[in-house]
Length: 159
Image (cartoon, rainbow, N blue to C red; front, side, top):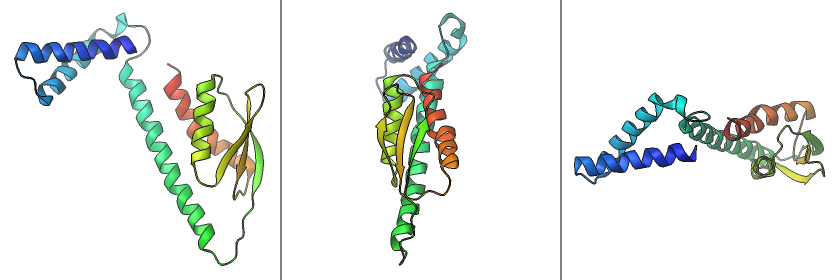
């Protein structure tokens, strides 16, 4: 992936030198030409095109912002109610992620979402212990995390 990015930038800069224009638009045209050349020669590169991983990172970022906004609204609705009717819970979340940075990213995304915090990670790194401010069903919460954050992290980290 890093080689593809470097090659794309080299092609973009070469295009700028060949065309004699050093503007942003010329660089973008060169970058698009580089993407086209890399796409045409993709069978010579190991793994998939780097643009897929960048797209997965963008999707993960947008997912986080969506979940952040929804959780903020939920916490706000809890706070403005005259009677505080919350159901806090601590639950174990079994994860399929294996590397340290994947688990750290998942823990950070869960903790940065208002109303939830990762309290601990098990010694074998297969279980996260999560505290939720207001939760109806633990199984539903586990499925929500698995189908959103964990799935998006797997798309970023695995080819």
